[in-house]
Image 1 (spheres, rainbow, N blue to C red):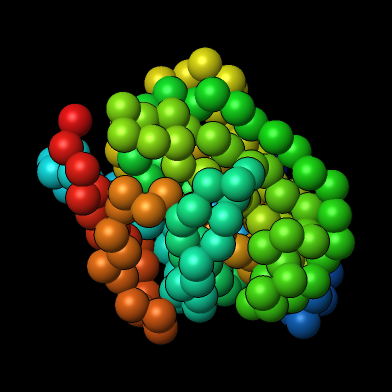
Image 2 (image 1 turned 180 degrees about the vertical axis):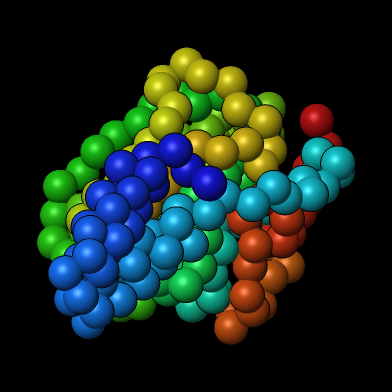
Length: 206
């Protein structure tokens, strides 16, 4: 479980238990349920990361909602968008091994995370990962409910494939942009697991 979850879950559980003393059962039940749900939301299960360095793994749990050709800073590539419901694990992982060369916070709107406009209009963290093959981009995107996007890494940090890099609270979206050197193997509508599901394979060798 993500440590940050305790500061939200424990007060709700404590208030719920206190409400039981005077017999306020309905408020108690709601608060206890809320506390338990927060524990569930902040879960952080271990993942079996592929040992094949020629693959790109999913940065987030959720449904693949878009796979589109898209330029990024005048470079050709493809964007894969993953929608996270409130029931999905919300810890993000590095899709590739490399060095984080840039982390850019971009303020913005709070469209529903399932909408295509969220990719470029919503509040987000843009994480640039420099690899021996090319730069890979990960976007942590806030949604209509999620208003807190956390990146646990800094510029200059080295990351391994599947390493935890951040978290978004509640429903949200994560995009990964890959250059043309990566062949996308995932399908739209497929459910992805962060650190495990293979999204693409590099067509070039180091």
